[in-house]
Length: 515
Ligand SMILES: CC(=O)SCCNC(=O)CCNC(=O)[C@H](O)C(C)(C)COP(=O)(O)OP(=O)(O)OC[C@H]1O[C@@H](n2cnc3c(N)ncnc32)[C@H](O)[C@@H]1OP(=O)(O)O
Image (cartoon, rainbow, N blue to C red; front, side):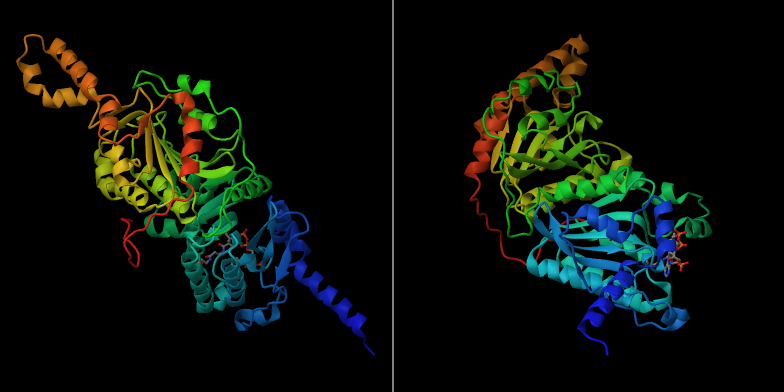
C-alpha cells in the first residue's frame, strides 16, 4: 500500500518532469544555439537559492491539432519570485523547449498571475522572453492571453518597475508586452523583435532582409530605439539587469538610497571639461562622471539618439536621473528621437520619485525638412510636457549654451525647475549671436560700407549684451551662477533641501501627452 513517502517521491518525480520542459534533446538544441534554458537564466539573474516557483504543474487544456498528446507541466513558462541584491522581484521565463515558448491560454494565465502578485506586493517585474509568439494550435485563446498580459503591463506601469529581456525570438503581438515595459534588454545575435518577419515582409512589400537586420539587438538599440540595452551574451545582459534594478525603488511608494560617497565634493577637473569656445564639442559624460558618485553612472539608451544622454547615477548614495544634451553629436541639438528618449526617461523618473538633474548645453531644435515633416513639433513637445508634469525634484545646470525654444524645453524655471544653476560661461539667449545679428541688424549690415566688419561688430554687440548668464539671473530664471568646480556640492545641497518636496497638480483623470 502506498504511504506518504511514496506520494512525496511521486511529487519529486513530477517536479523533475516539469523541470525538464520539452526534454533533453530540445535542451541540447537550445544550448547549440548559444542560448540558456529558462531555468538556467533564472539562476543567473537571481541571488543564489532565492527562487521560489509558482504553478509548476499548470497544463494547457487544448485538444486541437494533437495538443492533447503534448502536455508539459508548467506549460512552457517558469514563473515565480526571488531576490536581486537582496530585494524581492517577480518574474517569468519562457521555455523555448516547450512549443518554442509559444504563449497559450494557461501560459498567459501564469504570467498574469505573477504580475498581479508583483503589483500587489510592490515588487519589480521582469520578463525573460524567448517565444515563437501566440500558440498557433490554441487559436484565439492565445491572443486573449496576450491581451491579459498587455493590460497588466499598462495598468501596472508607473506602479512597479517592469523590465523585459529578449533572449530569443519575440514576434508578432508578443512584442507589445516589452514595448509597454520600462526598459528592454536584448542579447546580440540571439534575440529578435519584429511585428512581421522577413517572409511576410517579402510577400507584402517585396523587400528582402535577414531576421537579424530586421529586428536584431543592434537594430533596436541603434535605429528603432525599441531596446535600451544590449549585451554580447545572456550572462552579460542578466548582470546588466541586476545592476539596473539597484537604482530603482521597488515601487512608486518606495525610495532607493544606498550608502554613498561623502567627503571631497570640490571637483577641480570640472573647470577643464567644457571648452570655452562655444562651437567646440566635448563629451557630456565626462561632466556626469565628475558629479556623480564614483563609477555610479549607468547610461540608458546609449546607442540611440546620441545627441541626448540619459541614465541613472548616485549622488551620496541617492539615485538621480540625468538628462543631458550631448554636444559631441549634432551639437547637442534636440531632434525627434532625442525628444522621445528624454521624455520617456523623465516620466519613468517622475513615476518612481527619482530626482532629475539636467545638464544643458543646447543649440536649439535640429533644423530640416525631415525633422519638420517627421513631426518634431509633436515630439519636441513631449519633453516640455514631461518636465512640466514631473513633480520630483528638478535641478538644471546650464553648462554652456541654452538657446531658443530648446532652452525653455530643457527644464527651464518657467516649466517647473526647482533650481537652475549656470556656469559663468553660460549663454542664455533666443539664439546664437551670429544668427541673431544677421536677423536684427540685416539692414545695417547691408547698408554698411564694410558689411563684414559691421557684421562682426554687431555679433560682438549681441554677444556682450545677451550671451551670458547674468540677464537670466537678474530676472530670476537662473537661481545662481556657480563655479563649475562646486557643481557636485551644489547638487548635494539642492537634493537635500528638496527631499521633502510636495507639489500638487490640478485634479484630473490624466493628461494627454502628445504621443
Ligand atoms: C499574435 C502573434 O504572436 S502572431 C505570431 C505567431 N508566431 C509566428 O508566426 C512564429 C512562428 N514560429 C517561427 O517562425 C519559428 O518557430 C521561430 C522563428 C519562432 C523559431 O524558429 P526555430 O528556432 O527554427 O525553432 P522551430 O521552428 O523548430 O520551433 C521550435 C518548436 O516550437 C514550435 N513553435 C514555434 N512557434 C510556435 C507557435 N507560435 N505556436 C506553436 N508552436 C510553435 C515549433 O513547432 C517547434 O516545435 P517542436 O519542438 O515540437 O518541433
